[in-house]
Picture 1: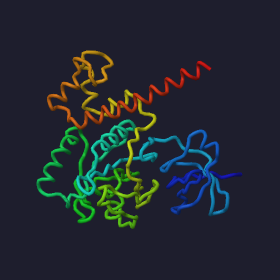
Picture 2: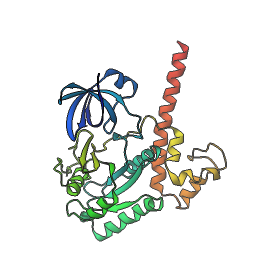
Picture 3: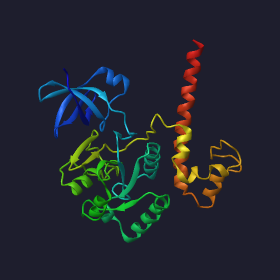
Picture 4: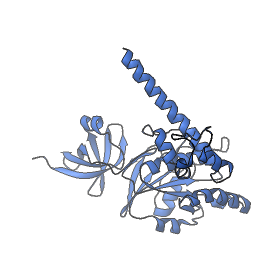
Length: 306
């Protein structure tokens, strides 16, 4: 009789998985039906069978997921930490807004971590706090740290509970450095290019690292605009709480908050009640999703004509 065991996927390489068995990392081949039916991602809980005793396994089935974050792709997350910097490199708030929209869609608790605060002057730090106050008013926790100087790390670590904690953000913001400093690990870290002002990818794939009762997830940095494929136009507005809470005040049902008269959202932006950069992020994501949906409609019409 074949005995199945429950395991956790630590990392993936195309059709191959590295899983946790008895506290050790083992190789597992993924069955074709698993790839076809559900796919498989780091963080998945899976049922495996032993192929070579104590050495090699086969993934037979994926346990239904609690959530699946599309970028970076990780399953069954407890908390998502977005690492942002204002200097070396200067982070894009658009990526932060895109990430927050995505985690809201997946019902994941986000935390914003501002790293490299030791590089900021007093004036730069005040400006940074003013910007982050927008997010704090929306209910997002903001932690201020320096991995280099080990400032604020104990507060951040105490804020994290057991479970699966994913660290995400642009290349060069110090995700791996933070994990190293907090958990005493030795992950590869890179420097920010002085020429282009951006970080180089040192983490090339998503991987789960077990530290006590916690799984820490190091992920490749963002470098391109990628809106998850499953995001709809409705998800875009619901992913911005300050927009979603005003939708019922718009003059017309189905308002897109772009150029309609009597739009409560546009009015709030003009009054300064909604941060302009947040509204710009909403518009940019809306356009990407709208274009994608129009392309899908065009393809469906083309198939019907055949």
